[in-house]
Amino acid sequence: MKKERDFRQFAKILRKATSRIEREYFLMPVAGCEDAIYRERVYCYELYHRLREVFEEYRFPYSLAGEVDKNGHPIIYTKIGAIKPDLLVHAPGTMDNNLVVIEVKPIKSKTKDIKKDLKTLAGFLIEANYFKAIHLVYGGSESEIKKYIQRSFEREQIRFEGSLFLFWHKAPGEMAKIFNWMEVVMSISKE
Image (cartoon, rainbow, N blue to C red):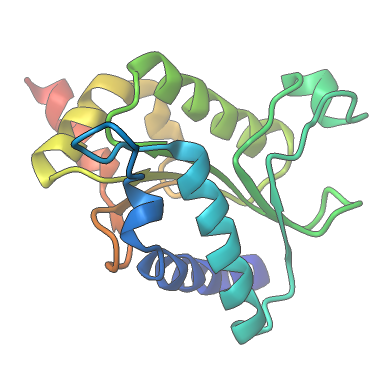
């Protein structure tokens, strides 16, 4: 299936692009502060830049769009409202070639913000004909990413197994990896 092959190629592209994100975009230094801080917009803009580079290297046949406002979109707005996912990988002008919708969050995000992003991803999978959804989390340790999932992912999201992927970008200079969020959710329900 073409979209499955395209998604696997995009996953490689995403991993390569994340490996190129330098520390200053991952944790932003702030004048007057001892510690650098997570800034989602700074990370997303650099990720967008790095993805565009790798799209060209791979000659990837999709368009990359950042924070496309769906307010007034004749199909999407009526079904899921005026939302702006962080990144879209698609062919603009058609609903047939919507490959991936992406939401990005730093590890220190508030639970309500994470749940809002997960709802956005679900909406794009169900109502906007997107093939796959990616929730990209950056920063933290393995115990922190497990806690992130435990406090944000819910059992009903199991229906998105195979369509919703969690990529974890642990540190600058490293490639993001797919993290098995289902395993964590299932272990919670057994407790």
